[in-house]
Each structure stands twice: as C-alpha cells, then as structure tokens.
Length: 219
Ligand SMILES: C[S@@+](CC[C@H](N)C(=O)[O-])C[C@H]1O[C@@H](n2cnc3c(N)ncnc32)[C@H](O)[C@@H]1O
Image (cartoon, rainbow, N blue to C red; front, top):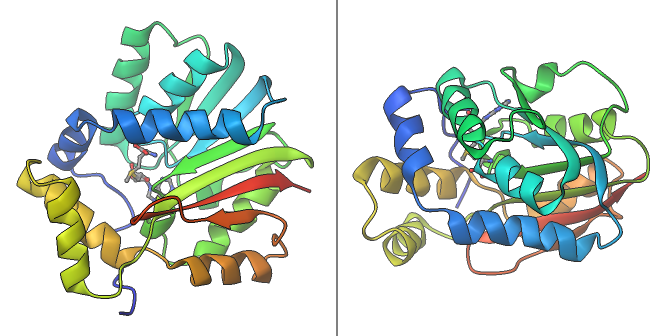
C-alpha cells in the first residue's frame, strides 16, 4: 500500500482537544523510559521535542530528567495552548517552553543537547527535512529518539489496528489514527531515509505491531 498524506498540522481546536484528552500514558511514558534505557548516561541539558503536541511527553521527560530544560516545537496554536496550560498545571513553566513554528523553519544550529519526537514524522510530506533539522539543531554527540507509526500493508489492516487499540475512543481520534497509519512510513523507508541522510548509525527498531523507533547518537 502506498502512503496517503494527511494534513501536516493538527490545528483544528476540537481535534487538538480530543487528542489532548486521550489516554496516551502508556505510550508516552514508555517513550520517555525508552530514552532513559537507550541513553543511561544522559542527565542534563537543553532538549528539543519536535511536534510536541499537547505537551504530555515534555512534562513526563522533565519529571524523569530534573536537570533538563525542554523546548517543545509545534506549529499548531490550539495544541500549544493546551500544552501551555498542562505545563502550568504541572508547575513546570520554568523548565518547559514552547515555540509555535514549523520545525522546518527552526533557526539555530547546534543549540540542543538532545532531541525527541513522537508521532510527528507521518505528518511530514518530505521526511528528509525532518532528519536534516535534527542534525542541524543538535550539537554533535547528542542523543536522539524518534518514534512513529508503522504503515500497515493495506487499509483493511489499518482498520484492524484501529479497532484493536482504539475501539472505545471518540470517532475523531479513531479517524485520525486510521489516516495516520495510512500516512506513516515502513521500516524499510525509514532505513532508506537514514541512509540517504548519512545517519545510518542511528538504529531502527520495530518494538510492536504499529510503531518504529529510531535511536542513537548524532555525530
Ligand atoms: C500526532 S501529534 C503528536 C504530539 C506529541 N508528540 C505526542 O506524542 O503526543 C503530531 C503533532 O505534530 C505537529 N506538527 C505536524 N507537522 C509539524 C511541523 N512541520 N512542524 C511542527 N509541528 C508539526 C502537529 O500539529 C501535531 O501537534
């Protein structure tokens, strides 16, 4: 099955609110725990979260790494309003800030000590721009962890995954999940992107039936 693009930004207020209210605890905490497992020596510095959405991962990350400050980047204003509220409620405004811009427009070279990104890449028309930005913003020797959905072989399989993991979720969330699966990349495509960007030292892993993970040190 070929990739079917979905809109880049999640900037419909209702869509953002439903996404923010969904229970991603297991996935998001698992993402932060995986970062800690991959990089046991990492403890401090400035971390960029590309496509941070409603801010749940930056908050979890800040709790696990109390010596880090985090910049969340997302070009959806409704998402960032929800993120700002969540960070304020968590009492973490001193360490988590947000930038409302497309990651493609980020200025600044070698400004970050680590980068994380969950569920952004499938939104992007040209994924090479994403890997290029990572290399640009990170200082050499910085850890990076990226996770996203894996494209199934057919629309029918995508529907089976939606029904398996989001049976009781609101219809908007189920619709977005389905379209995200259709827009996602396969493991081979991600590996090819890394090779093209000379990032083959980053490791691609497929931890379950619907995600790929890329992790390693950017040189
Ligand atoms: C599926 S959400 C994931 C949010 C968050 N990372 C999480 O795991 O909960 C993807 C987010 O990426 C944002 N996004 C998509 N394309 C973007 C771009 N080019 N630059 C910045 N943000 C982008 C969307 O607006 C959306 O908030």
